[in-house]
Length: 245
Image (cartoon, rainbow, N blue to C red; front, side, top):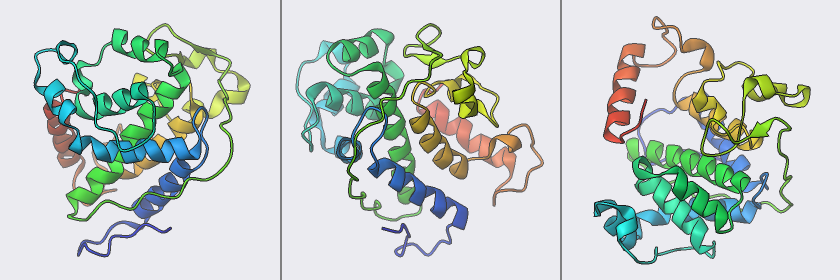
């Protein structure tokens, strides 16, 4: 399929459409720890969150752990996977390391958790963009066949974060491209234990925001609005989501 937005009168940049099409191909393909079918099911579940009454109860509770119930699922993903997806979408500000470790202890590997988190974030980018221009969500791609690669960089370790990451000093020659063109800030390290997911997420994110080389520059005219306007919107959005941006 080719992504376009026929219901919108707005002109969408060609490079942004290209990045969205690349991500849809990336989503449908077998990943590192998840099959193409599981990855597309994750996207389906992201969209189903709005229909989940239990998510609303958890969100409104003083503590999400103080309420009992079951998420309303639209897929055959495991219960713990559905919990991970729904909580990342609806209540990320109250996630804890203990919650992450609980998910891992209950059947999701560290790698699968990282891959899921990256996919959830990228699907939200896609769907938020469509909503922002007044368009319906882009139909999900058909999953591709094949098996996950199960590749883990040799320098992966769990120390500075809730999940394993690859610190720049631990990069092997085979994984040197993980931080190429970036400052290796922790936002870049977050998905580093699953390089394929990191590449897919950042390819899409950069098209929606700014390439790394433009980050230190405030005189850029790369986008239709100024850099100051971009950062004002980013900061306000982050504050509303209780993000440490």
